[in-house]
Image (cartoon, rainbow, N blue to C red; front, top):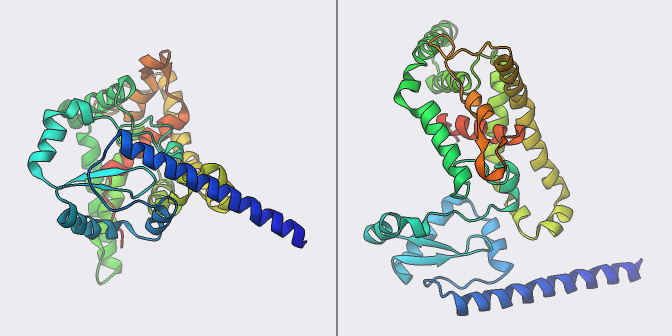
Length: 319
């Protein structure tokens, strides 16, 4: 037993030292070939572990202190790769407006993000290119155009009636009411209708909101899985399984709505009029990706885009 323990510890130390030397060598090479703006010293392995223990709210005060010390442009390693923060309006204008084409692209997603965004097949984190442009153009033309917004006027009236009815019932049974809960409920009902073209029962609505909300709140727990995925998948196996389970729950509640709308389209029941306006998922089912062999989006990618639509449009109060 002691022999096996010694061998296991030795192997772990070997892999740890090898990874440390590799990161140090890579860090030194990067500094020589691509000099970055000033910032605090990055220590491989140790720095990421320190930031894993901190909350997102602690980053802003730290950045303010770093800008005071290093100037308006600071290189800061929150995760393994460097992030550059700009705290000057004129410099931000030069970067984002005057040289937007140079700095507009987005980095490749981290391992856990690839699962949740279907390998960057979404708008908020997708790499700029043909796929991102067609997804963004589709959302803008099919859902955000003023004529499309007007087509959901009757749906908004229905949602308003539901809100008033819920408030009346709550007033009769309670001395005080929490208005924000009712607003969130009807807002999510509206978004579900715009996304899937149908009204759903409260039970299904609650399941969808729970799946989205739980995944949103749990995201920070999975950051550690981005470091050496081959190792962390083994060391944090239960956490990895939890991530996959949350993604599975998301698909379980959304895929039936996608398939139902797909069947309705095949049956010719989806007429683009005021009584049955074109839903977001209709446009996604018709969409083809030109740079990927003119293929249609698969169910997982449609789930990702529908989730993005619901989260962007809903207002969440997190205590």
